[in-house]
Image (cartoon, rainbow, N blue to C red; front, side, top):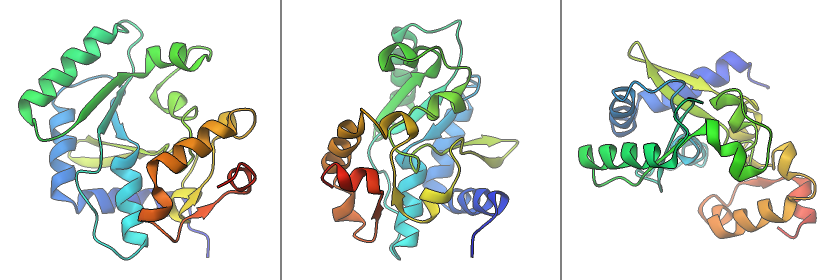
Amino acid sequence: MTLSIDSCRQKVADLIAADPARMRVLAIVADLALPDCWIGGGFVRSPMWDRLSGRPPKFPDGDIDVLWFDPARTEAAFDEALEARLAAIDPTLEWSVKNQARMHLRNGNPPYASTADAMRHWVETATAVAVRLADGRVEVSAPLGFDDLHSMTVRPTPEFAGARIGEAASRLRAKRWLDRWPGLRVSEELRRAGI
């Protein structure tokens, strides 16, 4: 049975809301009051895949990817100052803050229009899911949908499915996701690239 978008969104929101450690991190980041600000990547993907694999969520799981969008403040030094501020609040976590309004330069793309637009250019579809606190509730952004997240499928985004498939395959090998989640499905594009 295929879940509706709303049902998938609610499952992610419920998973994060039931995790006090993740809720604390969301509250810390919400206090920054940054525009179009989310936490994405493994912060969402990993606990979902842990749950689907029948194991308790592991936390923390790598860096905390704080994403925000403001074309008026694109200096890397601003992100570094935010990382230092977050580290002063909780030095036990590895904070990574990136204003998505400047990330198109690193990726060789036209300027992004929002954080969600930037996430469309990430490496895997299942990683392009983010959460934030709004009025005390967990909101979820998934510009590429939830199918691969909920089916435990590693699939490159359209940007990485062609000439850049080698980058996606290298990342998957380096992350060792297949060791952590043996039940992961790997897309045909990645299988052809040697995964």
